[in-house]
Length: 424
Image 1 (cartoon, one colour):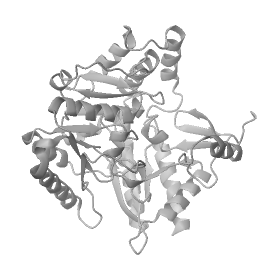
Image 2 (spheres, rainbow, N blue to C red):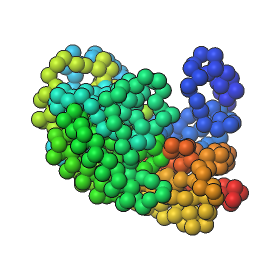
Image 3 (cartoon, helix red, strand yellow):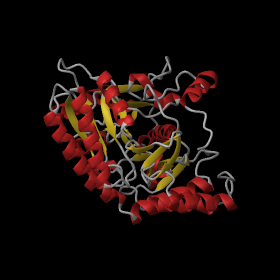
Image 4 (cartoon, one colour):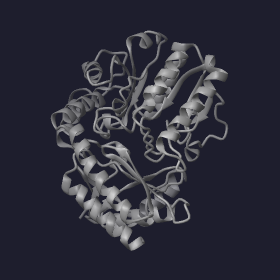
């Protein structure tokens, strides 16, 4: 066995050399040293079924040999030049991405992170409309740059104490005291009120089709179509943030496709690189034509990440990962709903495809955040890694690599049942 530092020394080095904002899961966290498809391995040789995928990043699996091969082959010939020189991988990726993007969206600006992509999308909306302000939803997460943090609705991710006042927040399509349709209707009414008071100042509304960190908040299927109609009447653009939901995660290439809506601007990242840092904001001919001022991303769309992303798109198609996410997502959701009937602590099961969440509440209706942590710790000790999110961090998140098997779903449900039985 290799001579690894071990968890305790890594935690100490984090304290010594990183910022205290850099946190980790678990009271007794393992040191992760390797990965292979849906599995991770720690410094003690223990294998874990990864059911979080680095927060929806490795949709094609850890160290996928087909994708890794494309990255290495490109590294051998050309790893970087910047966009001021002509290289083939970036334009080939843009062309391939255009073939899977919704509707008439075909132009891409490549960068390195979801934050950068969302920042670019907000800038593009301002350039195109000549307006300055934005609408965003409560409990949203759009990034950690100044403007993307300003349009983020989750308090824990709004670290800057003096954020921009160009953003108006409205309720999202969820309220545990109302039905889903009632909450979604109230959200749209709140948007209309904002537009009535300052519509001529608003450049765009930005939204995740499924709020990941917000707690897997999943609007009803009619929500975005009605929203788009409201925005179009007032010349306001719709920016859809697919950073966490894109590339097969929900059973379609992009989650917004479930809602039969084509946004004006769409942002992507995470799974596009399967672990390589790449992102993009994308739009149609008309809006793209307005962005004429000189701009570039030094590392955005470099040959290695572009070649990797092409391999990712090929792998998703050739291995039917959208279909796999849809089929196994249905099986997983059915199993979670059965557990909900068995254990009252599970208040809600929601999500689409392999982006599912279960919200945990105590008998008195308070968020069961301590219980959520106990379940995560138990599952980790049983060889399964889950995520958690939500306003109160009481939502267990199921976002595995899309290459998982039905047996993996059964294992997670079996171990989760065991964890809940010990807890309840």
